[in-house]
Length: 143
Ligand code: HEC
Image 1 (cartoon, rainbow, N blue to C red):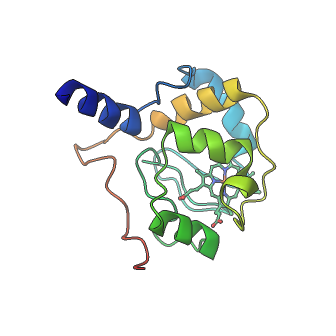
Image 2: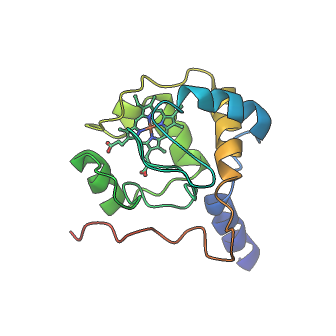
Image 3: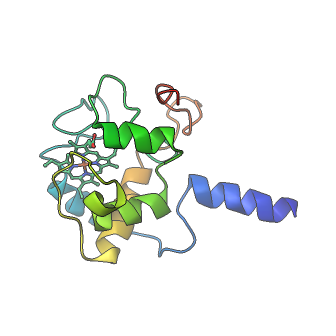
């Protein structure tokens, strides 16, 4: 049982086993579709969209100083945490997965693109200084 529980934690924190492992280098290329609105990496700032460092394991709607839609903060308060699984669902059709999101992006058709993108984003989700990657940047709105 312990092994199973650990496996669940690992897949929640890292790349979900239900999806193929992506290629981070190819994901960097896919990220060009996101880069007009999102920054990631050292010194990344919020742009039209929130910065995406430490995204994997982050509660939705919690990047500091970013003004989210109510839909996104509500989703986070309702328990939405970014993982390979939730990113696959969100990025396939953002407006279906988080109804009312202000992210104006139609979605990615190719699941392989999302696999690669998740692999790429995961490279910015490792703790740089030993801090827990899952630590939310701010508490979600109390409900
Ligand atoms: C036209 C601008 C735009 C594009 C292009 C865009 N996004 Fe976004 N994104 C946003 C905005 C704005 C939000 C905040 C949504 C809200 O508050 O409802 C957001 C939110 C997000 C979130 C939730 C973050 C959080 O902190 O909870 C993720 C993950 C995300 N975007 C990933 C992506 C990825 C990956 C791509 C490329 C495939 C992409 N976005 C393309 C504007 C964009």
